[in-house]
Length: 354
Image 1 (cartoon, rainbow, N blue to C red):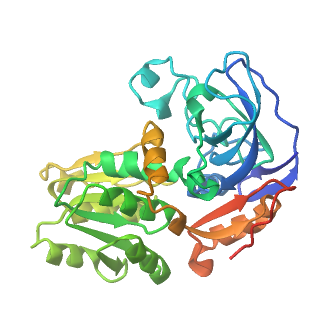
Image 2: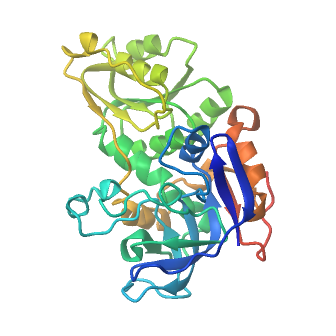
């Protein structure tokens, strides 16, 4: 099969790779139909996730067809159309019993991280009964693939950890794909206003289209805007959706006393925590890897048309255009890319790139 292989920091290749086999009784083999690229994949290529070793197939989000199942798999069978979750929980360890699937001691985030991932024609998915979600015809593949990671991450790590409530002022720093998904998820809780901060005007335009009430470039004093909008109080919730020291620090400066900072971004560098300023403010700071426990709920909402998903997809490619898709996604400031979707195996219908 063909696959996108991590060759070391700064290097990947779309090349031949061995077809996967069922190794354990809880495994499935899935033929990949639709896949996307995550900002975390870019962090891996930069070398920010050193656990990923050269030779690993990248990717942790996909929709596909079950081809083969292990002897203990009960919830799916060959021929089923499924969503592959970014998290593969064993279901038995302490963390899984507490719904903290991301911290699973036997699985967790393994696809494209500790084992071969989804950016390939076929993928082995461990712990299939909890890792795969059967899909109805009501959810398009390009929508469904966004529920593998980006929407659960925004909902769980941003909105739930940040305890977004009706009437809140929510500031989201970063209007990339995860920031836009956080806008959509936060709106479910009817905050008074959502303010989005980013450097790129194209992304702020996308943020307004997704539901932001106010936007500001990061070079135009977002702290002043938030202070003006809140009578000097500050944001109830500040969501960090970039993964840079300066954006995290900005969140801690914009949050009100008693407020919450929810960190979503993947950080590859140390961040200074200014406790000399924060200790007296009763601020709660949360971090988190997505658990994906909310995926069934979000799938139901998507099937009912309650989640604005397709608007996040800006570019589509064939699967074998993986390297071109990475180039477009990595140059988002120039290309306007939000989420790129690669649709269909080599023998399927070609989806035109925007």
